[in-house]
Amino acid sequence: MGVGSLGIIEIFASFADWLSIDMPYYAYEGDQVVVRCSGRDNNKIKRLTFYKDGAWLPAYYNTYIISNARPSDSGSYYCKAKRKVFLFIDDTEQTRSAWLTVRGIPVSGVLLETQPQRDQVVKGETLVLVCSVAKGTGKTRFSWHREGTRESLGEKSQRSQRAELEMPVIRESHAGRYYCTADNGYGLIQSEAVNVTVRIPVSRPVLTFSVPGAQALTGDVVELRCEDKRASPPILYRFYHENVPLGHTSAPFGGGASFNLAVTARHSGTYACEANNGLGAQRSNVAVLHVAEFPPKIRLMNGPHHCEGRVEVEKEGRWGTVLAEEDQPVFIQVALCNGTEETLAECEQVETFDCGHDEDAGAVCEVHVSSIDILMTRYLLPKIYEA
Image 1 (cartoon, one colour):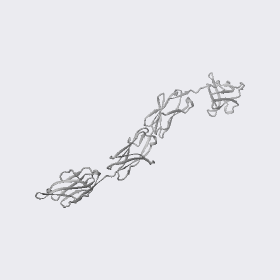
Image 2 (cartoon, rainbow, N blue to C red):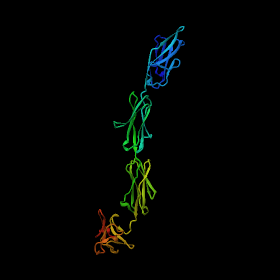
Image 3 (cartoon, rainbow, N blue to C red):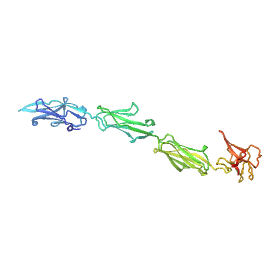
Image 4 (cartoon, one colour):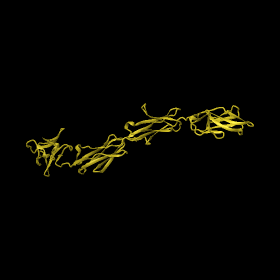
């Protein structure tokens, strides 16, 4: 802001109305200020000097220039000059004093920015909050704040239009809205708030199988579930069998994701999964899945569904009922199984065989916490079980 933009020039006449001083009565910090002294007949001036608060100022010709005004330039200015009044007689005259006030420029355009320049920061990174002003002179006091809290995060006072506050290790608790203020003595100005989101990288995910003990039979549909409970979404999960990719699925809102696999005997082996949310990938520990072929040694026939029916057992390549049917051999009457037998024929036979050829058998399963006992009981089958 120059002198011309002020539009206010004070002209002070000398005591003798011969010497005068021209200068603005106020200026803004950083302006150029011109102090000019002149006489009614300048060619009669023999020597011209400038003074501020009684101290001599170096000047050239009839002008003293303040190129970059500061508050310390405020004060009382005047000038003196000698002129020839008669032959060898000189007269010294002094202007009236002119007061200059240098004002600072109030802060404006307060802005808060983050480094890195994004509204998301990764947990463990360093976050720098940068507070700046578009205008403002002098010493400025910067202060940083988080919405919802009364305490200041930090303050700095310096002759600068920019100041930084460093938060060295970001945690999840640092998420929130931040703003800063600036004040150079002409009023406090606040910035708009900036939202800071803390993103959490993936850690080692956990891979689980839907079948108990990671034991499956051919034909089962096994759910492979990969999960990282704390990572920020979205998360992409990839699944591997013997380090060969099986497929991938995503969790757009975080948490885990599943991949279903209809298994055969060749699906036995090691499995792993990988989680990636754009901040780096992490792979799970290896898990082993055992897939056994369903033993073709027992079947249920002529029942309403696959879990009920007449029990038939294969022995030496031939199928027979557990009790009897008129034209089929009889193998077992009552058997008690503990669940470790490969075939029903290996189960303990707890009753003396006394079946006739007019009876068939059904199966009833009794499940206990410590073991599974399969009790084959004898009863007269209804019509639906007859061959």
